[in-house]
Every structure is written in C-alpha cells, then in structure tokens.
Length: 220
Ligand code: CA
Image (cartoon, rainbow, N blue to C red):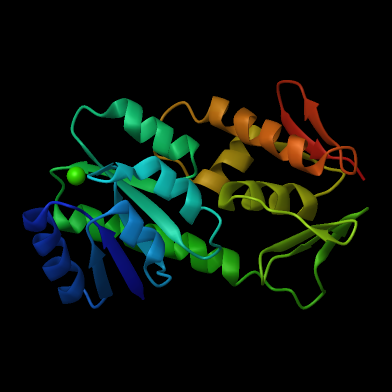
C-alpha cells in the first residue's frame, strides 16, 4: 500500500514518514501542491491543507478524479471550516494536528478498508444498468447513453449505491453510513449537496427522486 504525504513542515513530515514506514507502508513525501499533483498514484494521500504554493482544497478536488485514491486531510487545530470544506470536497476523512500515530494509522486502515470493499464488489453478473446509465463497480467507470460520465469518488459511490437498488427507496441513514461511514457531524446537508451535483450530471436521463423524510430513489 502506497501512501503519499503532502506536508510542507519538514519536522511533521519526518515523523509521519517514520511512523508510516514502520507500519509497513510504502511512503513518498512531497512538500507542495504542485508536486502533489505530479506525484505517482497512491492508495492514500495525507493532505495538509495549508500548503505554501496553493490551496490544499484545490489539490483535493483534483485528486477526487482519481479513482482508488483515498484522501485524508490534515489541518491545524481550530481550522474547523477547512475540515468541513475538505469533507464537502470529497475527503474520505481528516485528522487534526497534533495527532497521535495510532489514530492516524487507524484512520488510514479504515479508509483503505472502504476503498478495498468498493473495489472488491463482485461484478460476476456484469455492470449495473439502469436505463441509459451503466456503472462498472470494478473499474468505477460510468457511462450515460454510451458517453463517459465524470464523477467524484463520493458521487460515484452514491450513484452506484442508488443504482444497485434502483426502484427502491434508500434511506438517508443507510446512504450516509455506506458512502461516508461518518464519524463527523451533520452529514445531512452534504448528502443533499452530492445528490444535487449528481442530478446536474445525469440530467434528464436518470431521475433521482426525493422521498421526503425517508431518502432517495433512482427511478427505473
Ligand atoms: Ca502546512
């Protein structure tokens, strides 16, 4: 498993590298947003949001288009707004400085478990097909009327979840649990935001219905 550490503080980075290598990860470190985007793909990116050459959130948005890469944001204590923006932009989790090594390793293991679960979804009975929508859970590719659709990681997870249960009402709690496995508060609005973004992308082809007070349903 490969971990990319994006951290401009040498002292913090050194500690992280030592701990992660000790835990058996292959670790690579960069100190700038530009290098983070140039770095080889990683299974997990530990992303400091305060970088010298740019906004870590921009890096995050860019990384979101790379399937199979989980992102954990790293922020300083008190930067609650940054953490929330990070989660909204699709971060899988966050840690707050100063954090303990065991907490960090536990969070990395948790996001990897989720990523692997998603990847390991069986596709023996082929991709999910709902009307003009086709979703491959193994390659995480989505096409609409044969045209590739660009989704963020969370949007993909959300759409795949609804499509696998097309025609059924999927409760908000279930969605939040499956897609975010959230330990953070108030994910409700985040779910609505992602639904709105998805609706914008699937347009008139696929209808995501709101079932008031319950959840959502992908119409067949
Ligand atoms: Ca920093």
